[in-house]
Image (tube, rainbow, N blue to C red):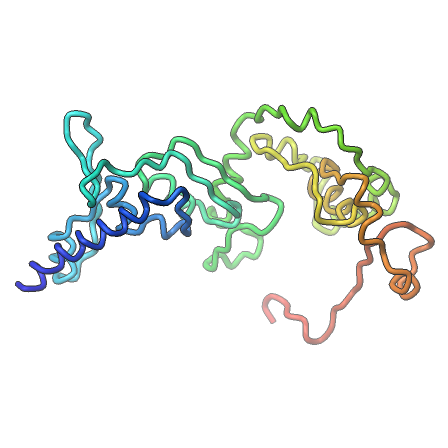
Length: 275
């Protein structure tokens, strides 16, 4: 009896303090699963009833979450006695590595998302699904929400990129070696001539087509293999991070300016599926 009387007041005080802290923040950062935290739900007008929570804990039942209806004729207050927090903007980073149910939590848990920004790359690591033993991503959970939306939404309107006059380095993209490497990867991967292009497959996404991290000869490979040669590099990076002469002496490449070498490192310590 004492626990059931004490816990609701403690929960209310905890939620009120958390709501006050979140109200003073400009940005709330959490994991996708963390967006379902009871304190955040309460601050946004989604509440877990304290009496029900204690009763269910004592009876060994699961928690139940109830949503307070958004009726303009009903006064709905957050735990601190003020109107619920409004979180109309949700930004999800590394969205392509998150399973779809996980990505849905921050969208719906705050009860007010109006604008969603998902950052990620469908050509990089997919969601990790431990229960999928196929090794080829056959589970429905292997397709992220961002990949699904990028494949179904209409193409976005691009304005600023069209006005970018930065000189681009295209020499490495047009090298015979780059094209041969791209063809070899597609052949080894079992790709057919009818392979859907990146632009068509993910038409609903906005590709950040200019990269500043790598030397253009390195970026050219990824651009040719994964992005249909749409990924470009500013020309000024050509003079940065030049391949050391010592490295070129050890692994020469017929006087080619390419700074990339693929080295076979297979050995007895390599792990293989099923072994």
